[in-house]
Length: 129
Image 1 (cartoon, one colour):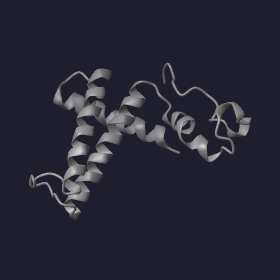
Image 2 (cartoon, one colour):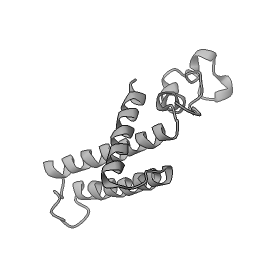
Image 3 (cartoon, helix red, strand yellow):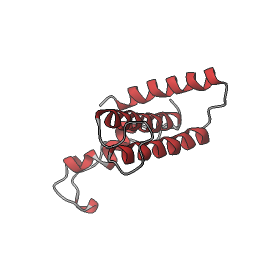
Image 4 (cartoon, one colour):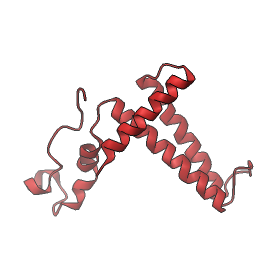
């Protein structure tokens, strides 16, 4: 995976965005932006699936609506990645520990796992880069 590299790039782009528009980019600002983008993602999904009025943004499942949904999904994911990088989270390890570990499991209960079935070793949270 190259998630940490991508997260670092997105975080840097987001820092430049804040600099250009002249506001303080804090962790709580990032968290609020994630929430804002999730709202926009939900709006795009509703439009794509034809469950809201046509706002002139490509409602009803057409190609424009699917493109808007994809871009809003990228926006939300990107800000989540920027938040993770800003907070010192090793997303690759965290994703392995939360999701990818299931690909290695023969046993479902944590106490029954072998060493090979466990999550990638190491901390998911770094104190600093």
